[in-house]
Length: 200
Image (cartoon, rainbow, N blue to C red; front, top):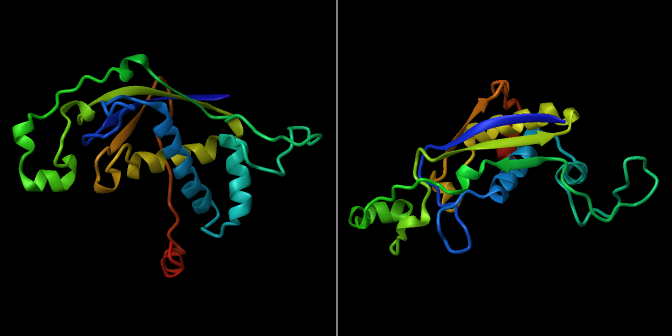
């Protein structure tokens, strides 16, 4: 198993929280984002000529599933109805108690800030502020190093976490720690015109 460690730091406030709508570090949204960007890395490595069925099959075998009907055990002897994820993800406990300095409510009353993301009924402790950080630890099988390193590179460059991420809230950076190699990657653009014309 390959293990990697990163400092995950927010560069813009993140609407990432728990069921009570309080800002909190949680692993499931990070794992969902990892899976989303894995699909992009998978397509990029194949120059965007993707067999979606094959991609979903490989994704299910790596990230786990409870739906793949034709999955078989490692020896190929018997059918497998469900599979656990081969990717393990953990956040440091300190990151689960974010140190937050929420902005004062009166600072958020302008229409522009409401429009940009805070909303009309802003809850002061709903946000993990820019600069909030935690340690992210990943473990995964060695044969997936290439695809997951490309995935992490894409997440570092383009990923956002939490609500309102499409507006840029929850932007973050991943800084390698404890001997983890720097993130490198490429996104082939040879077929960009075709992808755009196909509606990607």
